[in-house]
Length: 320
Figure 1 (cartoon, rainbow, N blue to C red):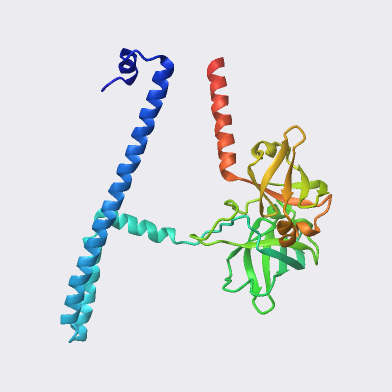
Figure 2: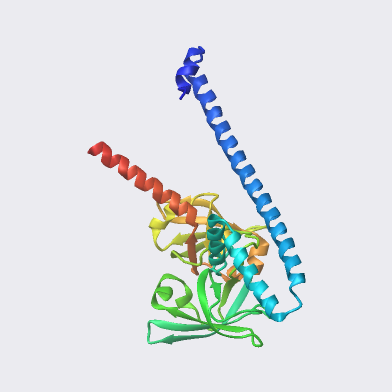
């Protein structure tokens, strides 16, 4: 194997030139590798398409010739199903099985609040359990099913009862939900944000939100301007602030918002709301002192935690 660095030194290039040439060389190798993988995938797809068409044509002809008898038609269908399964290569069979598993619906939200709902009833049960019933705008609950997920103030809740005609749905909340979120503070007639779970393939207008709230924050200041509103938050758990970065994402009561300024020492940050966000969400009724749910962006948390572990390991290696 050729040593790139030694080869470049023989050409009379400086170390700085060597680094630039080497960097471009590595990038070209990566680009070439990606291009080859893309061509290989395309060729495989074309081959599979042609193979499927040929097999369909042959089985269609066989179906026409054997249609005269119900028993022969049944025999043909069974043989065709068996042929379809056995004609697939092993890796194709695994891929098809894997794709079948992936069609399972998962709760996923985008941080684009679809509207607001009103608290109809809030019933505590034995102090550690509560049932919440909300009234939604008309047609919101179409195609809803028991067990579906709806984000309420950014908290993923499971539907246990609903009435499409009355536009109401009920949710059960355990002690941890009541402790970790602002849902335990709700009262009848309060307004909450809601978002029904998205489907794979739909547009993600905000950022990926899981509905798992990390902490709450208090609105400690608001300032209205001609075109927007500045809202300042103080985190209940201040150590969370390390995951909130300027110009990064954060979900506040389920709204995907861009972070403005961050004060790590005070555990505070601010956002700017446009008129449409204020109109469409519960922020229109939020005032100073109100509590909001906070969900930090998952990839930001993964990066921060990974860097922290790496730095800790480096420090231990230096001491050791």
